[in-house]
Length: 583
Image 1: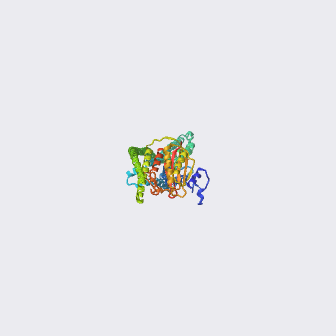
Image 2: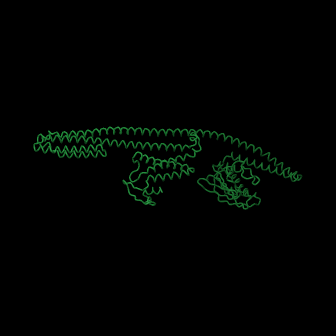
Image 3: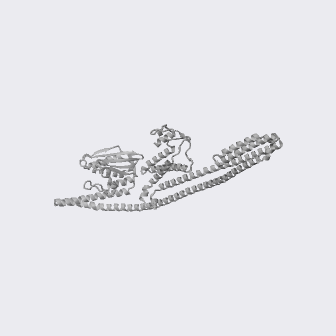
């Protein structure tokens, strides 16, 4: 819904969506539409939805969590802006026909954004018992995002305060200018009244019209300037009351001057002057003007103090902003530095452990190879002597002893196979790769032929796709194929119609080869044991083997910078995959 609102505001669609479900009179107040969702509210709703959506799937990719964080920070910023605007009594970012966000809406979005950010840390916080553990558990990128959000929020809050101080500073400056204009106008009015009084007196005394030539213009100027004073006073009731009194006194003085001029022309003006009415009115005018001037001077003093205060507040605000941001940056710097130090230390420890582990592995491989090699000859000798004994005494043994003899012979044979597999595994680890261009079709065909000869008449349906040419060591790759294909045949031995499928899939820069069978399969819950040495997922009595073949496969494929994996379901067969680089 919020997305539709944004489309409406952008002008891409035209839809009276606010009136779809409720009918009411719209209209405008001060040019602002009534009964419509604010653009900023729609934007905040949309970003909140984006933040909520991505936080639910943040485990799939870090980008989703970053998008959720940014969206939450913007939502918090919008809420802060409008709440600050309401508290300061000033519009901050809404202009034109964009209506402001309601105060309750701004509060909700502020809390929503904060809740979303806190939710991102909930997994770590719920598992921890101390701040030290929290510091270790929270990833570095989350600390950076948290610092960024804190710095951004500080900048927003301090910028709002600075903005308000600037507006007050500008307002005080404008008021000071108005006060100066008011005082100037008052001085001019006083000067004009004095000029009118002197001109009138001069005319009465001398009878010369020169003194009253500018009287009509001067009287009109006084009235005009008094009206200007009213405009400058604005809504100031105190000044307006004094101006009302001043206007009455000015009209009385001007009326008296007109009487003086008339009486002067009739030669009886001396009596009016002597009466002192004019001087009494002037004293009242001076008294009112003095009160206005005193009031304006007091206001000017307050305004200058306010202006100075706002100026200093701005300096303090910007200094605080710089200090806060520098503090946050410094904290982030030390956090990152500490994190990098810890990581570097951990990497060094890991490197040393890897060196030790590699040395141990080499010793183990050497030991395995030596033991296997040294045991091979004695086991062969035992097999040889057992064959001789079998020829010489088999007819003399009863069935029970003959069974024991055959068990010894089979066990010795199994031991020989195990030693051979161990030697193959050890040689694989030591072998230097001789990579060449390989034709997998030929290699698979040879392996199938060799296996087919030992099936003793059992039919296996072979499905082989056209395989690609790859880059690798022919001997080792053939060992992989022998192990995987022979396993497929072995685990379909109890299947009525065994089928083994060999194919490939091409991806960017790699080929994936797969061997699929319809045999017994295995339980994926034990997948972690599948490629381990001496690990078996089936009973030896059902499917014989040494448990080294798949470990050898894994070792060979990893030496080729590839991967090996498998998928299976019990009773429905298994599929083994391995990847090799393109030629």
